[in-house]
Structures are given as C-alpha cells and as structure tokens.
Length: 522
View (cartoon, one colour):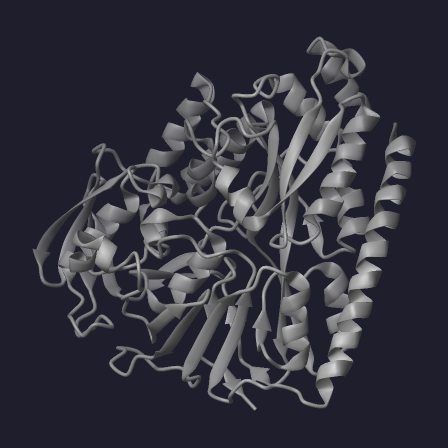
C-alpha cells in the first residue's frame, strides 16, 4: 500500500510541478516588465497584502478570521500581553491583577490616561463591557471561551471578573492577552460603530475602510511609544500570484501566505527578505459528524492512519512545514506530542476499516473533501495527495476546491460535505483558544464530546494551578482526543511572509500578528 501511495504522490507532484512552473515563469516575466518603471510605496507607508477575505462586519465579536485578527490588532489592544519566551502574561492596559482566595474572582487595575481613537477615556466600564461581550456565547468570539464572564466596576480604573458559572476559569488570565478592548458606548450601538470601524487604544487609528483596504495612521494621543511608520494599508488580494508580483514590483511592502515554491524564488531576490516561522496554526482535516459514516470513530482513525504526513511535508511543502503530532501547535502553552497523531500506517488503516465493517472500503460512500484555494498554501496539492492515500486503502475520495469566500461560507455548516480542510491560528498561546473552539459541543465539526472527554474538558477548564492544568492537558486531554480523533491534524504551519529588503525591524507574534514598534523603511 505504501508503494501505491508513493506512486500516486509522484503523479500528483508531477501535475503540481507543471502548474508551479507556469506560475514561476509568468512571475519572472512580470518582474522584468515592471523593473524599469518600478512602483514603490512611500517611505512613511507600509503596504501589506493579506490572503483572507474581509467579513461583512469588522466587529471582533463576529468572526474568528485570521486576517481580521491581524487587522484589528493594529488598532485594538489587550489588557495584558504574552511574553512568548517565558509564556507569562505581562502588563499592558492593565497594570495589576490578582485572584481572591477562591481563585474565582479576578481584580484588575487599569492604566490611567489611556485614550480611545475617538478621544474618549478608556475606563473600567469599557474593559468590563469588552470582556463580557467577547466571552458571550451568543457572539462568534464566545467560541474561544470555556465560560462566559461577568464583570463588576469598582471605580474608573478597577473592576472584577467572575466566570458566569461561578467556577474558577484556568484560562482567564491568558485569555486576557487575546481579548480586544472596545468602547462600552460602541458596544451599545454596534451597527454604527464596531461593525464599520475599529475604535481602539492602539498606536494606529483606522481612518478609512474601502475597496478591501483598511488604512491606519498614527494616533498622536497614544499612551505608549509611537512607531516610526506613519501609515499602514492592509489590503485583501485573493490571488497569490498577484500578491507575489506586487511585492516584486515594490507596490507592496509585505505579503502574507507565501507558498513554498514562491519562497524559494523570493529567497534568491536581493530586494526581498523571507520571514518564516512556526505559528500557533495547525492545518486539520475536519470530518462533518452529521454526515455518516464520519460519526464512526474507526472510520476517522482509518483516514488518519492512511495519510503519509512526512510525504506531504517533504514533497509538497519542501520542508516549509512540520508534521502535526498533536491537536495543538508546538508554539501553544502546554503542547505535548501525542501517540497516534501524525502516524502513517496503512495496515492499521485497513484494520480499522475491517473492524468498522468496511473491509477494503466496501460499503463506504464516495467521500469528498472541500478545501480552499488562494489562502492556505498548497491545499489543492496536498489534499489531492491525501485523496490518493485514502484511495490506496480502499476509501474513494474526491477533492472539491473552493475559492476562499465560498469555502468560508460552508465551513461551519453541518452537512455541506463529508470532510473540510481548515487551519486554526489563535491570536495567543492559550490552548483553550483552539480546544474549546473545536471540541465543545456543536462547534466547527458538530462533534459531541463523549461523557469521559467532557469530564476531562471540564476539569481542565476549571483548574487554576498551572502545573496541574498542564498535567491534565498532556496526560488526559490530548490523549483522549487521539482516541476519539474528532479531527485529523495534518501539519504545523510555517507561516511565510515576503518582505521588501528596505523594510527593517518588522516582528511578529506566534499568532502572526504584526509588531510595528521598531519598523523603518530605507
């Protein structure tokens, strides 16, 4: 079976190489064509091209979109920031925080003198309203949270946070590193405020949003140190080749989601730097549990064992990714490798199918996988390879490529397909940002946790001791997920940015948010 799968990989790669070759040639021609009249961005402006489409509303409460998380982080700040080296929260808009003796009520003291972009003061009323709204289960953002929050304002710069259940919430402090602060007045009137424009406390103020472009300018009343770049333009450009050409011509300073073929081309260009690093993102194959037989654990395990993960990393991504070996990225707090995840074993796949009553795939319907194109690099290529691997053990499967917008429209639906491709790039390193968002009842795959798994999830959610919490995660939670296989982790994403060589000092968080503090342009 391994030989059959390897042969199919060779065919898939040969087809993919033809497409990549044509793309590279057209890019090279485009570069030569624009060299003589190269269009450069202004020295005080940074132009960034994103790969994921904007949502209908800009509100942080209404999405889990990666590009929009990056966009809002330019203007909106958090109470705390995560020191990713020590994995410890640090002060930001909040200067102090402490629990009561029950480890349930958190008292937070705010920085004084902070202004919103509309000129109003940032106070405890705003922080309390933001925490309650962002954790509210009625909002999309509530999917990040294992519990809702209830807040009590003590004075202008002090408030308390209590989980709605009355139980401790182990993730709370870490989650405050990813909770955007909004104006309480804006939250009362979202259609005329946060749906249309960011009003935050950050160093950049959004001044316009039109033609798929958000424009930001320095906010002179910012409480901290202002960056040197005056203007940021963040644009959505669907086509990867167009993004690449814009970077090469100088029309863009930074582009996101560079694929591995393009990265090798850019690395030989003296005018461009390639920034690549593992992020909080893993790519997953998600079974839709309302579509039989995806509700059968043995079928899901058969699919997981049938996939040659090392082949995907080596032959399709050319090493610009790592095999997933857990349900969270290795950049996430508490990460641990899990037995059975990322294990390629066609014989075990065949055994699982036989035990499930589908020996050699007999009795299974033809399965399909929906995947996006234009956003996540190489999705069409590696899902064609995955389909070939499944075919090798008797699972008939077809790949249905969709543009990013169409794929996003069906991602959360119960029954659009048997399986769907998805990545998850939380804005922070708290594991609940992935785990609760995916495995609580009725989430992205419509999986319903078993009683045993739910018990583990509940104990993990309410444990406030860091070491005990990590032990539950590593020894119980992640292994229980491997037993259930509610989704199939494929790769740990290596996010690749293309950056013009005259841009200096650009940094990123592990969630791939931008840090503009020290950016200059020569």
